[in-house]
Amino acid sequence: MTTTTLCRCWRLTRADGRVFAFTDHDTAITVDGTAFHPSEALTARALEQTTGLSVDNSEAMGALSDAGLTEEDILAGRFDAATIEIFEVDWSAPDNRRLLFTGEMGEIERAGGAFKAELRGLTERLNVPHGKLYQRPCRAALGDDDCRVDLDASAYTTETTVLAVDGAALTLPAMAAADGWFAHGTLRVLDEAATGLVRRIRTDDASGADRCIVLTEAIGAGLSPGDAVQISAGCDKRAATCRAKFDNMVNFRGCPHLPSEDWLFAYPQKSS
Picture 1 (spheres, rainbow, N blue to C red):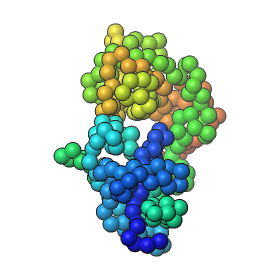
Picture 2: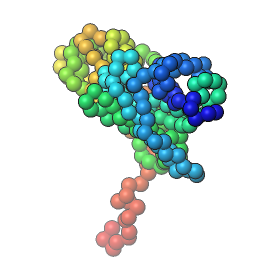
Picture 3: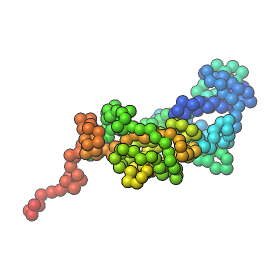
Picture 4: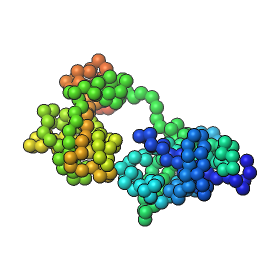
């Protein structure tokens, strides 16, 4: 590989499977079955790589454009935790290449029609705590392999349309589900501009004529009245909720009878 024919190629894969491929070369290059197109949508600062278990990191910078990365998609969180690969390629013989970096998008900042994204190497995952905790609340996620609740059942998931949008607060038609049924659950957009976006539900109020839910984070991709959404029931991870709401106490993964800190620090006294 000669230095006079080197270029860099970027392949960015979002969680929804959509792939973006850029190169700093002046013509398109096909590498590893992917066509990389010339673009100013993505450039890089120096890539810091280390031996051992230290985290490799870098930054990606670029201009927001319709052909590449759009401000609407970034605000909507579509690029959060997207996988990114950086190749060094001999453009005169694209099969002659090497992989410089594999990781994912971290924090994204935007200003003045441009963006700056943190790139986190694979060793970043080693900084995430692993293992199981002894705690009163359930440590399983609703619907996962430990919980085993079927969220696709009609009792827990329903499709409806949005009546009104006010930031993170949404108004939905009245439903038969009890007040608070969808609190801690999820909302997925099914059509129009925000299709595929998922947000957690903070509160669920069914006390009025319509149903009002508040999301933990607003959907910033053009959610509008009339858009179809799917909402799923939530769980506050208490044993009483697991038993009464889901009839799933056999799969409860918490320790509801764990002594409190007051009990742990108690000591004998003459008066009690």
